[in-house]
Image (cartoon, rainbow, N blue to C red):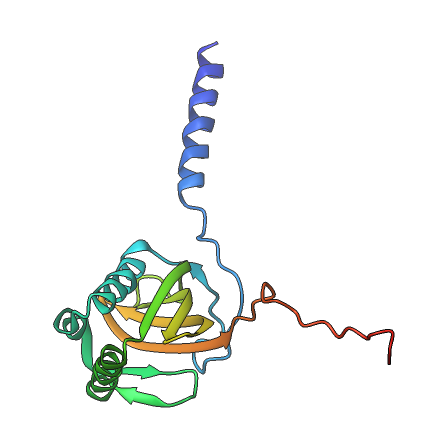
Length: 184
């Protein structure tokens, strides 16, 4: 009986040790030179929180906080493919905000999803995928679009943000019908 108990405890301890040493799950592929053998891992919460904090500061027009969350070499690439340095990007968003204020236009966005992935856990930053719906109103005109952004975050700093967008087509709008009268 003692031998059976020892075998049971030894098996139990071995099972626990082996389960703690299972490799981290990874999936996918990439074609980045020097990293093409690496796969993607689920990221962590801190980079996600950095993006959400940056976005909250943007909504509040807290440009100083936003600047503190970037580096001198941070880049922002818009859906039009234009890449701006951090100073130029801040000048643009501030000028756009002043223009909107002067004409009574509004720009609002709602977060739809956000997640983080990491290609080399523990060796640098993470990519945060951030998806939002945006509404821009100017007078009676409103346009809506969906934006997918990919942020590269290292140690709580925005290093790069790439943004892509597409218009949201509302099927709820009244459809015009072509009626033919009997007289024709």
